[in-house]
Length: 133
Image 1 (cartoon, rainbow, N blue to C red):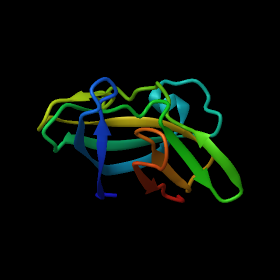
Image 2: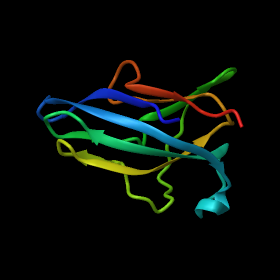
Image 3: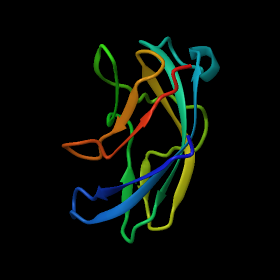
């Protein structure tokens, strides 16, 4: 944790690009009752991130539906949920220089593995290893 990764965000309507950075501050596995959610398919992981628009144009970070988990022996799974821990939402469009710190709740098949974020089609924009414990 503490790792910062940058990627180019592309505005769908204008095609304008800007640079976004995401700092992974913490990950912890929690129970459904700890976050007031229904029973997960796997287990819940709360990922605390700081998202910053470090470029010169508006750009977005929209994790819901764009995050996937993969691990040894398990097919790639979509994992971002709409559940919330009550922190600020990081799922938004950022003007240059704006930043938000908040949680993303993931429903992962098991501890460990790798979570990737796909800004568009093609390869992942960023990826991070999940803790095995």
